[in-house]
Amino acid sequence: AQSVTQPDIHITVSEGASLELRCNYSYGATPYLFWYVQSPGQGLQLLLKYFSGDTLVQGIKGFEAEFKRSQSSFNLRKPSVHWSDAAEYFCAVGARDKIIFGKGTRLHILP
Amino acid sequence: SAVISQKPSRDICQRGTSLTIQCQVDSQVTMMFWYRQQPGQSLTLIATANQGSEATYESGFVIDKFPISRPNLTFSTLTVSNMSPEDSSIYLCSVEMPSHEQYFGPGTRLTVT
Image (cartoon, rainbow over all chains, first blue to last red; front, top):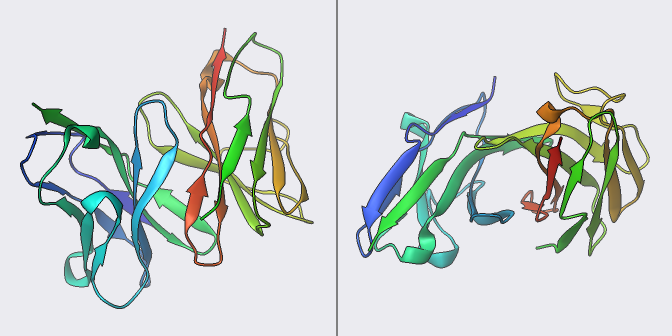
């Protein structure tokens, strides 16, 4: 069965520091992988996606993610966070007909 | 990408009543989805709504409780029937583009008293 695990419920980093949010998935085939961000009171915005090809994908807002098949991981990174990055981040895995979301990681930014 | 709107953006309803949520997208799409996000939780898929066919419901969700309409390729409605406080959630619709990306509406925040 498909599943997504985000092991960190909360992450706190200082503004300007680097960030890595972890995501592990379980899926029987090569999955589609996504990262979404949800700011308080807002809908979900797609940050980036992986379907195939280059395992390092670039997204919006300076985010990138790396697909590692051997580790079943799709971790999200950003070299230098900004206060506006404080939000909830969801990793998701899917095939054409369904997307399964992780429980999310709430990112807090220290000034 | 797609621009998706939902109405209402929020509502407070009494238990036992029903609320219909509308989802409008600015382009024709085959697949639309309805999700529920309970307070502090992740998203749970309620059903998939394809135009011209019955909605497909996920385990734990039934048509009598969450009837869905999909009259054309740009519009769908979700009704939350006979509401109880446990139905207090954010309800989101999403669409899948030919690129397999899903885009989400802003959500409808429902409070049942």
